[in-house]
Length: 190
Image (cartoon, rainbow, N blue to C red; front, side, top):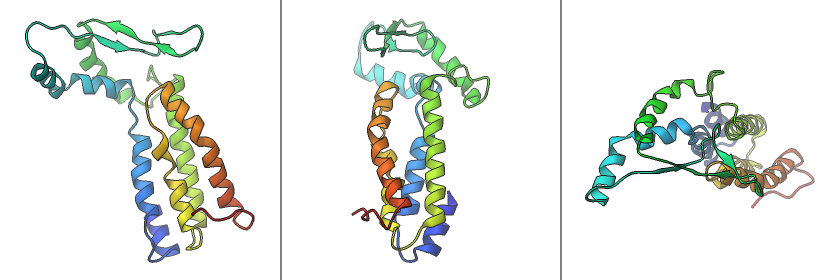
């Protein structure tokens, strides 16, 4: 997002923090952990080497996962229930990791899940907010611009945990956007 740096330099000369926040938190939203990334992490040689350093003798790996397409949900909470997969999954994960080129395409089997739709929505929302900030950035609202650009900092976790954090931060984002759009009626953020 080179435009954020250009806007900060031209519209808020001598001030810093906005472009850095955009770079950091846009990356955070783009680098979400999906099924392909989990498969890649479990497939790395480092993972196996770490296990071998920690455990001796004859041990068996079991994976506790909640795959979106075949996973079950708790009948009361509606939250995913993790299923235990045996050592055979260790052979499947490198295969799944190789299919990451499908990510974001119509052929992505995980792309229609609620979690992936949420990830794409977060990225799109952030791009819109940053573009709005760039269009109206001044020295007077620079601090508020940084605060808005930093809101993804509070979005953590995976799956329903991440969704909960998104739900918790959204009212704050709405308040910040209101302050941005109505500066004469809302006090500046500290």
